[in-house]
Amino acid sequence: MTGTQPLLKVEDLRVSYRVNGETTEAVHGVSFEVHAGEVVAIVGESGSGKTTTAHAIINLLPANASTDAGSVVFAGADLAKLTRKEWQGVRGKEIGLIPQDPTAALDPLQRVGVQVAEALTIHGLEPRKVARQSAVRLLAESGIPDPEARARQFPHQFSGGMRQRVLIATALAASPRLVIADEPTSALDVTVQRQILDNISALTAERGTAVLLITHDLGVAADRADRIIVMRSGDIVEHGPVANVLGNPQHAYTRQLIAAAPGLNPRRLRPAVPGALSDPAGLPRAAAAAAEPLVVATDLLKLFHLPRTAKGPKTLTAVNNVSLQIGRRETLALVGESGSGKSTVARLLLRLDRPTSGSVHFDGVDLAAARGEQLRQLRRRFQVVFQSPYASLDPRFSVADSVGEPLRAFGEGTTADRRARVASLLEAVHLPATYGARQPVELSGGQRQRVAIARALALRPDLVVLDEAVSALDVSVQAQILALLAELQAKDGLSYLFISHDLAVVQQISDRVAVMRGGELLEEGPAGVVLERPAHEYTRELIAAVPGRGHQG
Image 1 (tube, rainbow, N blue to C red):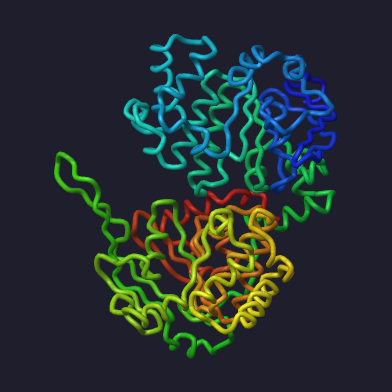
Image 2: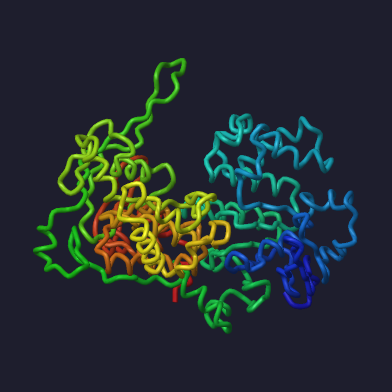
């Protein structure tokens, strides 16, 4: 690209935030270029300054942020000199934005077609009636099935992947010359993620649009970008063509990101164990096979009744004839896309919901028959760690209160005993005991998830269900949590049900893998067999969709 005029040129950009009367610089003199038709990825962990840089370019910084120095030149024009009215002609028309959270970005009270059409009408590109027709076409181009009917629906009637496609249609409606895609697929299943990224690639290539891709996933950047910019704590620490950055990283932080990216650096965190039911503690194979499983689910069926229609009552089969087992000291990974029935199976195993038919036995006890104190005592033996480290902790509780809550609920020990147990649990998840006095708002996402794990371990359970427990974390934090889970399992003999849509992560931690789609169990077996020699086409699709596989070292 040397010798050609860049479409976007950022020079010595400095951005600061003012919080509680104090000013903190978040971006420290960042400089880079993006050329027409090029895909440039900015990668780094939360807090690295990626999104702040992107929002500074498009003049969407929050009220407490300010651009203190530097310049942003787009198509030869200095964007800092634009008036508010002039910005209205640039943002959306010349520079499109695909934001991270489609739930927050779409108006819940407006039909989807109206919102896509608005990108055309507010810039005076098309009259309202024509824009409505164009919105249907744009939805179709973005991969929305039955776009004419879908255009009349509201955002809540769309899945997460479909809502993200709506944002893509909106961002590309005016055929902008540059699209800023800010973590456009971070919360999506790997197959949906691939479809969305394919969709962005196809539409932008067709129009010659440049893309500035903001992501914490180095695997996604490896697959999609021409050049990579690595940011850390507000600085660019490394940049260059993808092959150079991944093949010969110069900065220690880049090497750390590559090592932590599951798709780029596949590895196991614990020894692979042969046999259908494994025992990593070292039981002989015959003894491991003969050991009584901790959990046995047989022929689980779960029907949900939907609102009655003109054609009569309707039901949804969420789980259809699923049978599985979880061995002692074993990790069973339950994988599949959103809506496959994974979380419903987990709820049935935990007796948070009752199956329509079928049975669940926990340590030989039929959970459906358990009542009163027996059920209460069983419940202490299985615990859950949820996906969001931000939603799973009570913001009014200190860390010590959150971790100690199960102990208080079951009347465990004296106050002094509980205090000592909380300190021990924090130490077990590698947090200083002093963190007990902190509030959740004072913790990072990874630290919050460590607290959630400590709370799940408080009653010394036999089974921990990890429901997408690392999918919302940066790759290096994710690697730390996975290593912690493996360490705790080896030390305390835990069994895990690890629910995930990410097979690169599953490969690291699981003994056995069960693959679900549409409520059915498609295949199940030892992790090495299922992930290396999958029997079902759907499993092969999931494996092929793992980002970064073509760049594995």
